[in-house]
Image 1: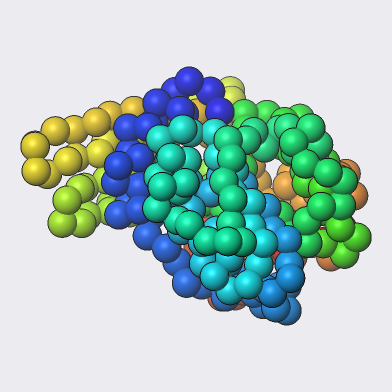
Image 2: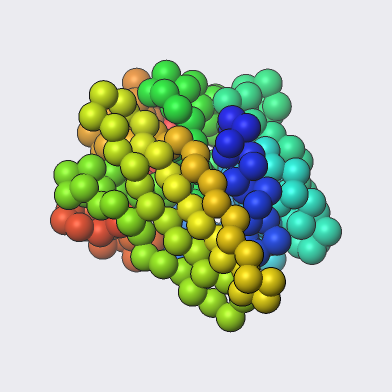
Length: 246
């Protein structure tokens, strides 16, 4: 995570769970892919405030959540406690250093976390690390945005998130000569009439490129979906959900 990305997540950390509330379909998707949770060891990359990690642990899994942002991580440590759950600061490019080979039954990377890596070589490094720490037959489950659709339109803004306390506006700035997209955000904090603005670069990672990188890392049975309901990929859906195995 570069400095601008860290500043962005710190700026929204107090309101993160309100902006991105727990999605029960994520829990259902992971449970479906693993058949059952009890006894499974899961690594949750980009765990943020720990909502999904906690639900997985409550379902019987042994869960390790990692995140680079200290503000988000501290919320997870303080608010999400379970005997099967631990949190630590961690970099998704350093999985081989931080964990043992064949330690996990599943590695998760949801919330568009993967595209915070700003090059395909870094994405491959992360995928190779995930492959190493997975047990044979283990699952890598990803969720990012559908950059095939976003770049082809192009989609210049994502839906506004408007709640009792905040209004969150998200826009994209495209450059013809770059794989990176400028992700511009304005967070309006209604109680104090304050706007926190930021821009961070994201990698416009398209599905065919991601498939090639997954195969290069050694993964097989690669499946793409339009959402966590596992509806078929294709068209103008914004999410892109991926399942593959070692």
